[in-house]
Image 1 (cartoon, helix red, strand yellow):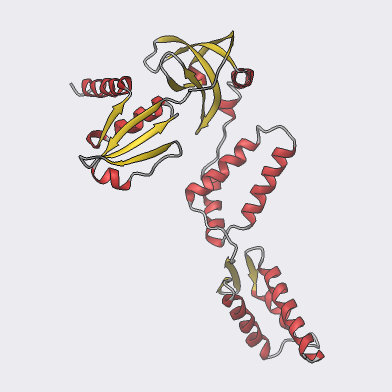
Image 2: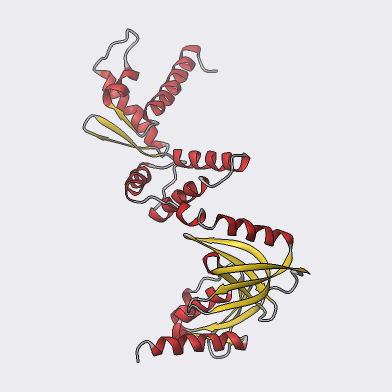
Length: 309
């Protein structure tokens, strides 16, 4: 059984550990504030105060808490539960914070704000430092785009919810006007652009149409059926590309064929995005089916070659 005086000593040590962490919790602490915790019973500093302080610092390091001293300041570099983010991770957090400005006040907005706040509290020292640098030089302001198309966004959201077929009039990248009959699926937010994702039964394709390109939308008195909306694309990869290729969420592989090609099956990805991605794979990629996707890629190659003639 532990003697009372020993037990009190352990309790006092635990309290000092937590008090020390409390002082360091803001990330930095002056030596003068830290040493205050290690006065003797009479409230005075002794020769042992610095020795005791070093013992407590070593105790924290044993538990994975990285503390460093520079001149007269202590820096809390990392806690066991700290999060280390690179520039891409911090930019993603900054983007979410920017989008929050357009959320209506309510439970969802409050919950996301609390999540961001707790996430930032767990940044380690290097992440905090990087975050300060990025904040100075990068400011995400999406209002210039989202506010401009606020009405179109609201209309498209309603079309998706109503579940009826629509006719869209829009302009393509080359400036030509086009109209299609389709089923609205969802809005997709990518960087500073928004696209309306639709299924085109005539083509058997899922297509993303930029909000900025849409001229008009007419809702038809026809109920949309969302069955069989995923067109399957089969393509093959070879060489180093096949070895390092990472399957997307909507993909699976049929393994290696007799010629050593990796066979990939893709279902439901937007044809425009998929075509651009496969086009980048150059000669290490071959589209097996459908035929019209192969033809689209051939047209992309021909158009590119004309630019160099």
